[in-house]
Length: 136
Image 1: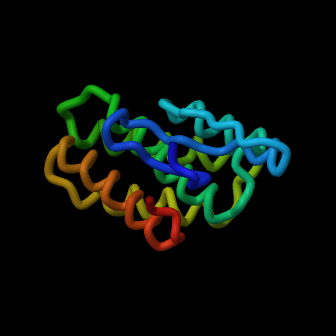
Image 2: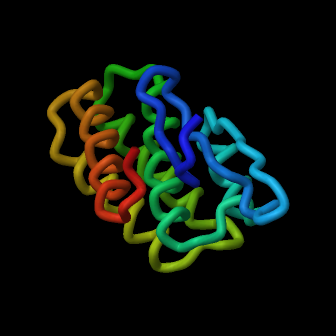
């Protein structure tokens, strides 16, 4: 298991996070597989550092997009925007969440197909992760 506090797994399409509420007593990991789980982890402060919240929220959009079945790009992008807004309602919502999820959406808006939009979401989330120094 990775020692990173927020780590994307390309194989399982999931986000592993260390629950910050238990540090330093022990390391408790959660494997997040949905945007709702990411929202909950941010809201209930399982993820607390701003850089980690930014990365997790970006991957929250990726989680939603990976499992969204659609072949209509306009509908997909409208729903992606709604999910961006949803993530911004978390109790820890701040400018950094808004910035990271807006970056993911802005990148996806350049797509010509739903599959391309999904790929662009993932690429942008990984770019944010890399910029924050949270890559494995």
